Length: 54
Figure 1 (cartoon, rainbow, N blue to C red):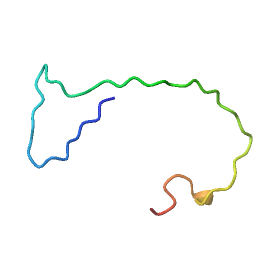
Figure 2 (figure 1 turned 90 degrees about the vertical axis):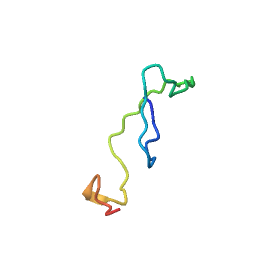
Figure 3 (figure 1 turned 180 degrees about the vertical axis):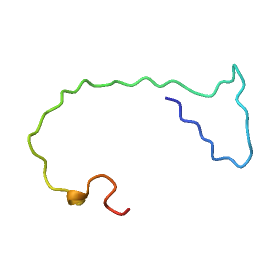
Figure 4 (figure 1 turned 120 degrees about the vertical axis):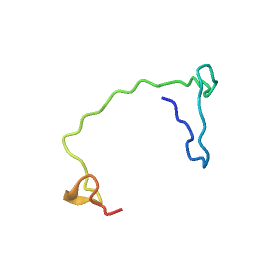
C-alpha cells in the first residue's frame, strides 16, 4: 500500500522512474483468533454499524 499526500493546492505529476516512497520492514506477529459465543453490549445497542450518529 502506498499512501500519497494529495492535499496540495497545485497539481503535480508523477513520472515513470520518480522516487515517491520508502520501504519500512517491520515484524508482523502471528496471531491466533479466539472464538467467542457472545459479545458484551456496546454503546450502539441494536443499531449496528453507523448507528451512533457521529
